[in-house]
Image 1 (cartoon, rainbow, N blue to C red):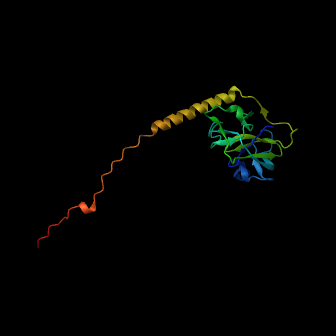
Image 2 (spheres, rainbow, N blue to C red):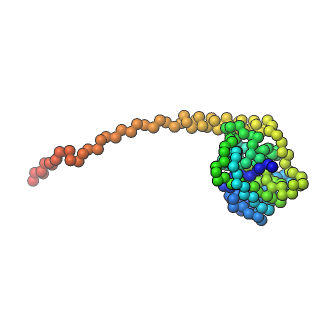
Image 3 (cartoon, helix red, strand yellow):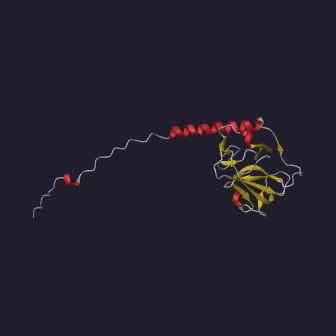
Length: 198
């Protein structure tokens, strides 16, 4: 069984704006970005999956301009959409722009069940969700990793590495702090001011 889902604190675009995945519920309308489908898809149900195992972290901006807007955690079987094609995110790990890490002990993944099979916006990235009817035709072609996506990831990985190097170079060394010893009040001599002449 392919495990898919997103972090509970991931922000999903609904008809009323961003909402945490953990706070979605049946009947809510999610923005769908799937060609040939209605612009909104109704949530049929939410599965909360206590999960132990590898997670995939997609760094901000890796899947295009500002997509995702912030780092996004997903299960390895989650589908991500890039240029109209769906990829298994676990197949895209490069160790820099898309990283694998172990889930914390209390991690819960959220799987969103929709009326159809659609791409929805999660923190600006398009993720493959839904397909409550398993026999329904899929609007996405799930494909193996190809040069279209690996070139994009390599480019973003290079940009991330360059930004990290520039960030380290831009941090000046901390100056040494010299503090004069505080005078001991008892050691100060009594100062007598001259009297004013009248």
